[in-house]
Length: 568
Image (cartoon, rainbow, N blue to C red; front, side, top):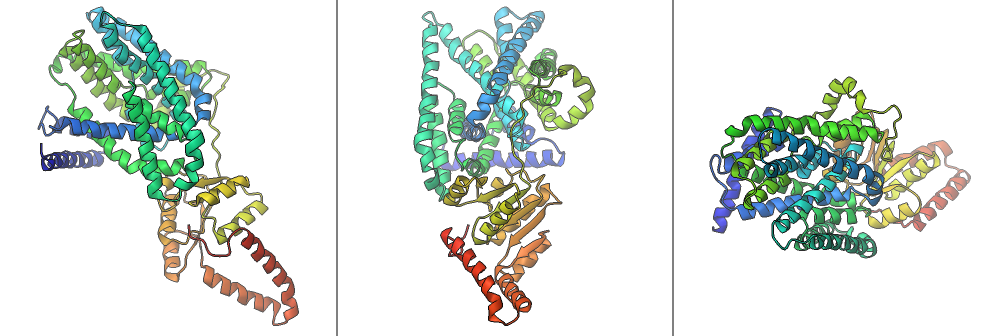
């Protein structure tokens, strides 16, 4: 196939995807569903537009790698330590329950023990990619239920990988459990090496890399891809390597900036993944399996969340946390389709079983998407019935996420004045700055600081603005300030906004955007001097005290390195 043919093919697929997405958006339906429908339309089932499956598979792998990498950036070792136990128990417990009960249901339908085992195991795994995309779309990656979900999904992925790796080995006469054990020891060693490199090499380089947006983006992308590729070359999944690569950078001050830079690229390639998923759905003989698929789908949609809520209730979690976490297992995984396809390749199951599992996948992905997106509304309706899953004594461990009533964007000359004011009034505040040295200096002084680019909407959307009382921006950029005002006002109508402008025109525009007070340094300085003249008169003696205070102030700023205006 020529380069033009490939480009034309990709253009057609994306164009169809846009049309379907617009229709679904007008119908207020989730876009994940539209992407899978697009795959069905452009795949062999309808128009058969996709012929370069290797290229689309590569794009899908890139999307998966970036998605898992950005998820890893939000998983600090402290969070893993805090929620590792509940993640392991829920992940393993749900797999064992679903596989066991599912096996009995399949036997009841007349399937052989081997076929029943394949189907029941396929029902036990939930889709990491779909869940992470939905949670990310809801901006809830930092929530408690998301942390637990990511943990047990990782546990499920490890179990799925063990099965995918073990089944072909155990199907051969010279199968060896020793070779499987050695592989996972190798994985632990690889993860340890990645952690050591991150701690002793990458962390000291953070300040240097953060000086350039392009360099930081290129480095983070290359790091994520390289670690993911090494893990895959050593016999593990791409997802595992990308997640480990992200966790290794989770302690860096620039982690939010890295994540924000990758968002747009991630979303494009993930769309390709879902389109390819839809295109590869096996629909042969689908209608013959509808009754069986509906029963097993209901088991996944209802049974999986219930067993998870039971386990989390026993561990002392609140019913709402247990409910929202339980909904994340109400669908089957892409691993499920891969597992059954492997069984068909080995001659253990036939195409009819793959069609059945495919239909279960379509049904559960469709309904679970709505369940997760509208989890809060569902909880409101079902809350009285969910009390049976909650113990009287709650021992839920909450995430220690601090809320700041004040955010200061930019620590230049004017910004330092605001910091002094906030410190003097014992106000809890957060400083956001794009200079790594400034971030390092302020952090050393015990001031809570976040590294980030205020002109990047993806970064701004990572900030929780709901409980803000005051937002101050001393950044001398109208574009950045207007973007800050827009993002804050979407979440918070009551917060007070103060921003810097260097022209009357910009000041008036900011006022039109809802800014409460615009600081014009040049005009403010002249106005302040005129007011002092009116207050003190023309007698020189009255200026001596003011002069001493001003000299002290200027010397303090000189020592802080603010003798020249700084641009953030």
